Amino acid sequence: MKYLVQISRIFVGILFIISGFIKLNDPLGFSYKLEEYFGVGVLNLPFLEPYALIISILVVVFEVVLGVFLLIGYKPKFTVYSLLAMIVFFTFLTFYSAYFDKVKDCGCFGDALKLTPWESFTKDVVLLVFVLILLAGIRYIKPVFNRPVVLTATALVSFLASLSFAYYVLMNLPAIDFRAYKIGANIPEGMRIPENAPKPVQEFTWVFMVNGEEKEFVTDGSYPDVDGEYVDVETKIIDPGYEPPIADFSIETETEDLTEYFLNKDKLIMMVVYNLATAEPDGVAKLKSFSDKALKAGYTVIGLSASGAAEKEQFKATHKLNFDFYLCDEKALKTVVRSSPGVVKLEKGTVIDKAHWKNMEQIKL
Image (cartoon, one colour):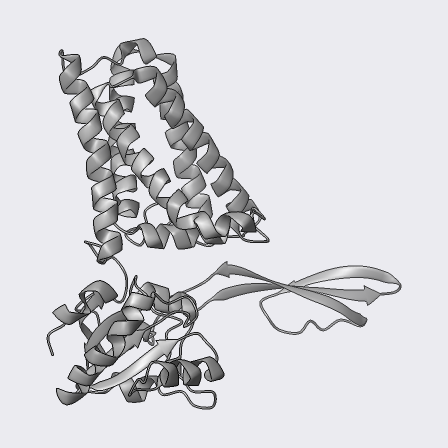
């Protein structure tokens, strides 16, 4: 039992630190995932959505710290019972999400590793087994340092370091970018579907009234040859096939898709503002001066937002901006850059640089 506990201790501790650090690297991304869980139709807790970022930071800091606590043997009872509470909660959450098909990606490892809800649930069940082993053998979890002051200092440093790192990435951008829009990525290439890519596989369940009785007929999409009255049809995705890394990015007007046109530009600056009504005022105040410099340097400058056409025109006039805003999905924009406003520099569709609004002056023009 003693050795099994030590193996579990190392496995759980390291996994919690890795999982927590990946989310700590991008707390905004994890907060967007929490908003999905809190939304109507999943947990139905919309009143928690405004606090998603705070909850995100607290959860991931706690996750990292618990992993460190476990490895150094700091307060074993508090640590193990906290781990148990956390893993039970996440096991319930991933099961609910998987069973009811509510959230497609659990967000357990951020954008670094995509897990389906069922994969995530399986992972949580395995972790739960290891945590239960720790609970049964809690007496075998001993501190790695003999001096209590060193143990406490290590625990405190891990907590402060986690908070500091969260603050840093929020005031800048994720230190490590795992997304499809990272520097060096080509957006058109990320949107392309290879000719030999696996196709989606769907199952259609048709319901017909036959001789006064409802009967089901399953096909791969073709309309069934049934002598009866059509009632309903349900579609189930068996295999999604190949899904490109970028699926929802576009640059549009109300009547025209200009994605290809702008992504072919040699020198393009995209000013990303998810929602014009909620953009950071200090960041908005910087847009005019930066866009003036970019235009003078020969760049094409455009704005991207999910807000309506009237809002875009009003925003442009109010802030005396010399570039137009185009339509793009808000979720896509939140993936492009974790800042609103944020700046992305491209050449022929390739991301050359990007910046948080606090650091937009660092973009070389």
